[in-house]
Structure formats: C-alpha cells, structure tokens
Image (cartoon, rainbow, N blue to C red; front, top):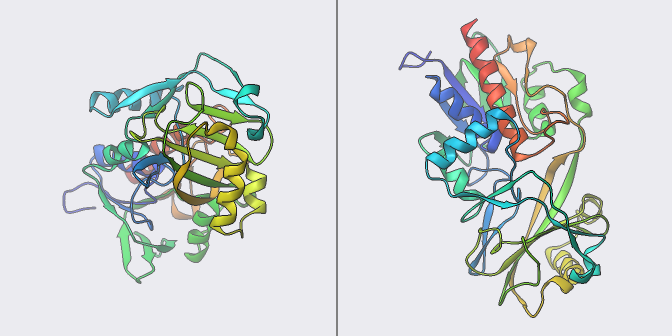
Length: 342
C-alpha cells in the first residue's frame, strides 16, 4: 500500500492504453507511476514538427463506437480537449500513383475524430496530473514476493502492489520472460505489421481532396493525410504511411531512399506544392495482424497482479485502433483493481 493508503500501481508504457489505465487507477485512489522509454509520452499518438509544420506520424484518427469509450470522449471534450469530427469516410483509390483523378469518396455513418494541434494535444491531456517518467527503459517484470517488481536499465527496482504492462506483445513478453513470469503460449503467436511513415512539410497546399485522408488498396502506400485538413497543422504538411509489406521489405533502407521512393509514389497528390522538409519514422509494431478476443489478460502466475493491455487484446469488434487500446486500458485497470481488492 502507498503512503496515502491506496494501492501502489505501476504502468509500463505511456501510450493510449497505458495512460487510460493509469488515469482509471488514479481515479480509484491508487498511487500510480507510469514508466516509458521514449522521451515523450503518447506512443503512436505522436505529432512531430517538420520544418515549420506539424504532422501526426502514428495514429491518424480515432472512433468512438463502444459506450465506455464514448464516455471517455465526452469527458475529454468537457475538459476542453479540442476533439472534432474529421470525416465519415475517406477518399479511396487503388494505388497512390493513380493520382486524385482516379479517386472516389466513400461515406459511412461512423465519425472519425481528430484533434486540433495533432494527437499530441490529446496526450498532454491524458498525461496531465499523472506521474509519468519518460526515458526509463524497463528490462524485467517479476513477482519475487508479495510485491511486483519492475527493473529498469539503470538497475532501479520499482516495487508496487500491481502493474499494467502495455507495450506491444513481443516487447511485453520479453519483460515477463526476463522476470521468469509464465505466460499463456497463445500470446506468442500474435504478430505485428510494421509501418514506415514519411512526414513532409510543403511550401503550399496539397492536392489531397476533402476531407483530407486517402486510403489505397494496393501499392507501396496505404494511407495519405493532409494535416491542415485534419486540423493537426497550421502549415501545409502530409503524412504518408507505407503499406505493411513495403515497410517490411524496406526495413533496412536509408531515410533518403525511403523519402525518394514514397515522394515519387504520392507525387500526383502534391499539386503545385514542393516538400521543404521531411522526416522518416519507423513503427516496428504498428498494428497487430491477429488479436485476442478478451480486452485484457491478468497473469495467474502473478495472482492477477500483472495485467497485460494494448491493441492486441480487443478482438474483431473494435480492431487494433486507438479506441480498442483505450478500452483495453480501462479493462486492465479494472482487472488489477479487482485483484488488489481480492
């Protein structure tokens, strides 16, 4: 127990699942610390500055289809987070090289939300008031006794009554293996697809049509977004997500090679604009290709005091999305609170 009388909890990973879980635990009276190896929290809720422009490099939007997440969205809006409905569907075409002339807009009833200033604006809200420690590389999660122990690269041992572990499963399992915690073998079968993202600041408006997002069925590029149209940037910029197979094939390529190839693919969508600055980002575990049906998993080997969460746990109804990760974070926090009350 913490000095305040509530349970002491650790959360490994400061992406959406980890931050949502931490907030739920803190609201329930737990003394929570979040550990993340990056220099900033957010995980794939990432907004980068390129030249004088901003660009969302990871998650591009989110949905709110399930009641618990609708509740989170309402709370964010009430707190002043500048969330807006971006679109009810995207422009679609076969490949990026076909250009805007071959594109058509496909509408559906489900709103997709973006955040003014980019996804990092939402991260700032999620992390506000939480004890988030960045630059902490966790090496092992174990339960040597009554407490759960998290060991970091600097050999600091963080102890708590329970822990929520949210990195992508290959990284999470490596932490549990290092702490000699048994896990169900089915978790090791979950695979992830990579994504290489190219962010490009432009010297003028792009030719990406409204609403500013394009999905491609085939080819090197899977997604293209205009960051001005989505409200992420005041200055023109594009986000290009390479397709999973292309990303895997070019894992070892240099940034210049990737930039040249992807800009050639989307040349028809630039209009009269010219890139003035670029940034390449590699998401090694961008998207789980298979998922588990349950929203979270508490490890029997740790008496339920080590709980896994993330977008691999939410099943086919929501898919590996921001919403799915958020729902998993809520479920993980509730599972841990239940174990601590038992």
